[in-house]
Image 1: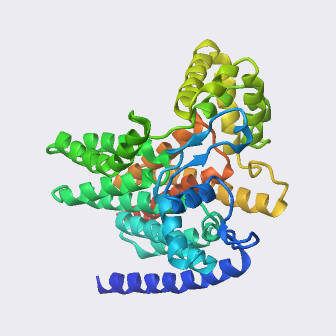
Image 2: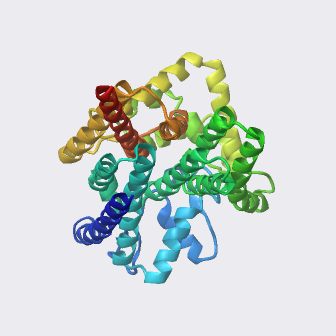
Length: 425
């Protein structure tokens, strides 16, 4: 017991030292958080974070979801991005006066926490230090995680909340009398959803797992988990209700559902930027639906969703072809969308390919599914489902890859432990 405690402390101290070193390296070599070239420093433009942070300084929370179409549509949204990461950026820039050093080190801590919670999950599942340490440092140096320290991206923070939720949930499943753990797990999962909406399906999956595994008062336990989850989401939904005068969780995605069923998308994705495909398709679509320009943003989103559902029902074969196009980025042979950067392609493909090989290999080596592996699989599937409804590019595969690495470390460790037990017999 003392040995495990000492090795845990050693790993944690090494992680702290490595995080400081990582922050220094990232700041001097890969800082893409603050733009100092304009008249005053600001968040680097991309994915709407700069718009949201700027609007928050004006007491608002809004962004244009597709600036390339703003001349024909009202695409201003007050709920397109969930609030946790913009609040993080807003507070960080306020406290530091837009200091890149400060924000890079905060981001470095977050990416290190991704590795740390992977380590804790493996320790909990295997009771072995070696595979947990391998998982820790694999996640730490993994390029898609390491380099997130120098960019504006909500995925690492979402993963911290998600992995913390899974870790707490796995602890609860080992002692189902501690309902406080179940409540905390639901709350943390709610925070992950308010960081990135793609974790929504995971709550349903975890609820079904409770239903299948909990022995006593299973329905009460599901209600407690869902209550904690919805309690965290409720301020966001209430805030949106005050703005839209109706229950809205997010808005602005209707046009994505529509253009991802088009012939333009089927022919061009994933080789061309989805933004370019969307702009080309919707400008053509607008010629026969000019009345859409007169609609406000929420009504426009509803119309796009209505057209998207109609397309899927009336042209199921085209929908299937579009779905097949969405699967192409899952094949590890290029980084999408194409950037013609050979080093980036090699780094991404090698990391992704190895993750896939170890993931499927671990399933073959140890096909038994403990609590931890079940929750990781639920999270993995839950993260992929929204991407298949809309689309996924290579950068969106970062969370699934992290989950596969943790899963693999548990699988190979348990397979090794099983072989040792077998040899003793």
